[in-house]
Image 1: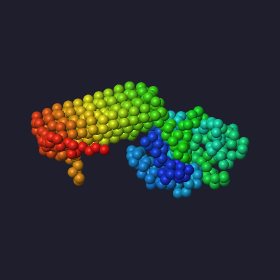
Image 2 (image 1 turned 120 degrees about the vertical axis):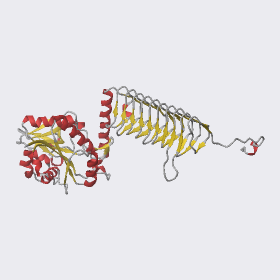
Image 3 (image 1 turned 45 degrees about the vertical axis):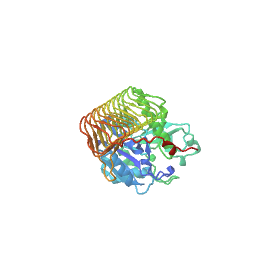
Image 4 (image 1 turned 90 degrees about the horizontal axis):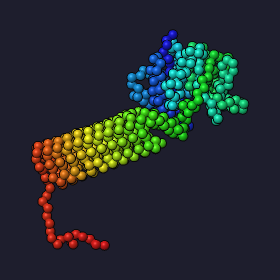
Length: 465
């Protein structure tokens, strides 16, 4: 028998209590979906144990969407899919899996996990695997105690083993039991094989319960965990919000324990995928999302939003700036109210000021764009200064064109560059110019009409109330 572990993720349900069109396993939480967290945690468990896992999803409702998402999110994992055409209960779901993949009977152990429980840690999976492996039990059910057991299966102990009594089937005495089923199980696969055909649907739900694999008289164990929150599932949008809050809280606690100062941490949104180095300071109401990497000694002021971006050491991001797929190199100063769009590369010691927008542009070391400017499809050389109200006119109605400005240049306020255009090094452009011809190194260019002054004519234009 193989030492590999089957993982059967139950993901076929409709999630009708959510009252949304999205399949429950694909509900978004903290930048991912519920099922993403489950697969990632199991993958980490596999690495902890040094044992290969066979990943399997039992799908049904919106199976095409679910399969497409999982394949896209985990392209390097081989994942099998068993289709449960009718949702006849958890026992039926597991039987559907083994009917579809009979070779799985050869794997010694089988985890059964719900797709809507994203808070379960890799260490928890590892712990119950070691218990079933070392205790000699045929199965382990994770349980916890609660003062409000309504809706959970109650753990009714015997000797040996125990029964799991579902809410609908419980007597009044059984409903008072406060040790309850979490929905997370690990079995010796042989135990499932011996008893799965004996499960029936003679209960008030008319379903085949997987919990019937736990009985008084069976060689099964319950494993009580103190942290009930870890096993929260999602059945409605209130629970989804609670689960997401706990995911985010866990991430922020991890960061603060590793030297990141988060001021009023409850006000900030930091997804688990974000990495931040020590001695960085995050002010209130900051949102950090996706594949964002932040270096050390960075300051991120209130209201900043940073998505899928890289921020190197010593950068200051001033209030209410918005980054998306941008790269800011060391010791630059950005904002306030700056927008760095996809493809923006801001090199070392640059200054991007208030109400400046960049897109698909490379700004070399020491460039300053301080006020009210748009820099799109451009490359600007080292130590060049861009005045207020600068615009790269990069779009001709059909195509985008590039603006290139050399190093050590000075561009006066209220200038427009009609791309495609190339300006050399040490160029000086007079304020108010619209430049549509290339400018060579060391040249001065100005493109505006000569001023005309008409004495005594102002009263003709000044209107009075």
